[in-house]
Amino acid sequence: MRTMAATRRIFPWLIILGCGLVFALSQTGAAQGGPAATIPPAAEIPLFHDDLGYDSLAPAIERSVHYLGQLPGGKTFALCGKEYSADWLSESLLAFQRLIEENPSPQALTAILKKEFTLCQANGSGAGHRIFLTGYFEPLFKASLSKTAIYRYPLYRQPSDLLFTSGAKGKEKKTGRLENGGLVPYFTRAEIEKGQLLAGQELVWLADPLEAFILHVQGSGQIQLADGSLRRVQFAAKNGHEYRSIGRLLVEKGLMRREEATMPGIVRYLKDHPEEQEAVLHHNDSFIFFRWGDAGGAGPLGCLGEPLTPGRSVALDQDCFPPGSLAFLTSRKPIVNAAGEIIGWEPLSRFVLNQDSGSAITGPGRLDLFWGGGSYAEAAAGNLRHPGTLYFLVKNK
Image 1 (cartoon, rainbow, N blue to C red):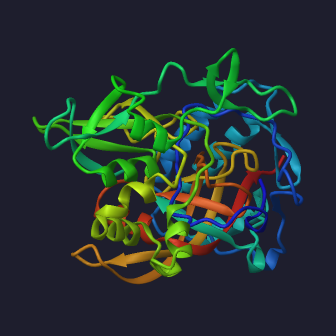
Image 2: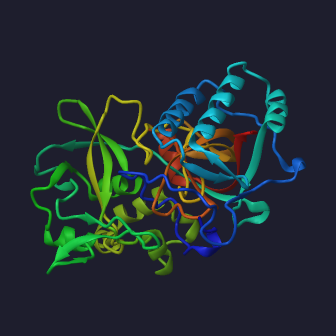
């Protein structure tokens, strides 16, 4: 994974998350610029105080263990300067689970982890290797299974002509469609929507194009039908075009200040300027296709194919850090009043699991925290843009 300094600057809340498949590659650290994580001085290791309590960790750990158990026994990953098998990463999670079942104090847990686990810090680009932290959530919108006068804006299924190359060794995987016997780029967002190129492939219809936009950003969500039933829409695929930030576009045009380019700020701007919506949204060529998920399940699926756990699942660059691995995150979280307004910030410190990925989550210096659903999750995901630290933990051999 490359550092933030090596990637293009983006407005980090605008992240397209989720992936239909994850390819568990042998990890070699950062693709450029050295290892993804290094062992810090003992004096810099934080107190492992979990602000959520230990109970909510169990399901997240179980999902990582389940994922790792599906991998070939010889699969290995690089972490903290060593190679670890998927089996050992799983055993590390189970050993950690046994520790927290005793409900140790933060001081006692920190002492045990320093003795029995290897700890290393993600190499972010900020001072002190700090990472840049953003958030995402699962929105809920009303929708219809058929087009009506109110519900006119579709989410589309994955089209049959969308193709993916396997990517031979040393070659980048490609996405496109066949034309005259060769692979060409798939249609852009503007081409799809202006040309109605996917007519008949609609999965569900929404009442507001900005609701469709938010679902494209978040990668999944729940919809409520007229009979009151809930269904989940889940990321299926994307068209292969590089993501282009509309927040950055609005700032560069002088229409917004950088600090205003949060999700609530941009949505508010587009609602106030409906005549600009189409041109602004079409600036981003990337386009997401959806499938039905399980609305009654434990949560939306991350790119490991496992349900995400609110407050515990994070999206990282899967080419930098082992999928399913355990880490400890510190940053800040919002304080929200009854009206859903952020009135302050307080420390965030908790154990998290690497269980998702995102188009804009590249390099060891980027992390996206899944907040779940509801008004607090929406406020946190829309406004979180803070530095933080991330420490990985793996049991000593």
